[in-house]
Image (cartoon, rainbow, N blue to C red; front, top):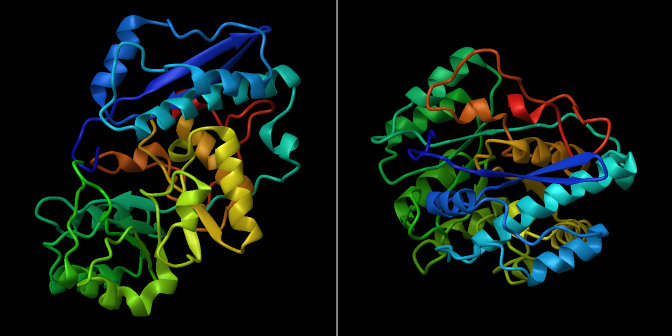
Length: 330
């Protein structure tokens, strides 16, 4: 991956009534995928379910049998993989597409490309992509080695829509400490960009206070309660389906934000299978015009390649189910 690690994921396929539903577990722990796949399809999923009763069944089920994931949130990721597959199956059995069930029209999806700039950081990753796709927009991960020259070069591109400070991560390959100088540099250099996931400390809070209307949150959003607990009301938050887990929690968060005038945008998890199309589908129905971090997977390759779809993505829902385009080719 462009962020410097190898990505594994697991595709769940559920079968019933002559149909198949697909979902993706985006857990970041490689051993969790290996353990699941080595054991085979041993989860107790067979039965006669409504979608609601299946979701309740999953709530009581140990979806990591014989294995303890490193982080509790991975249980939400797996729950989303299974529930998205169940939703796809249920809709296909009913002969409905998701947008028909929700009575919403799919719209073109604006996306940004999430990117780190290497070690040490350089303009090259952005320049190589802009050479192929001049209209591309970016969500960049600032790191403490960003100097004035690099920032000036990025500003000159006019292509930065958001900066992800990664201030809430601990023990991950993308950790970035709460660096007051870095926070000041990017907040002032990109006055129109969204600022995601700062770590607010006595040193950084005064720096970001004038920019609070641009601060968004991602890594700490797992429920409506998490949005309510934010240090100040946001104008927009990143709602990642895999972080919310159950479908009821996901749509509950969408409804809660809509009722309060809080905008949302979608976030990817480096999906390799049907999960990427599914988050693009949700974005097309719920927040097509925001800086969605749902670019086609090819943009996550370490080296850019020609021929990828440009933003905005044209709607590509399948005739039935919770599918967007041909996920096997994404």
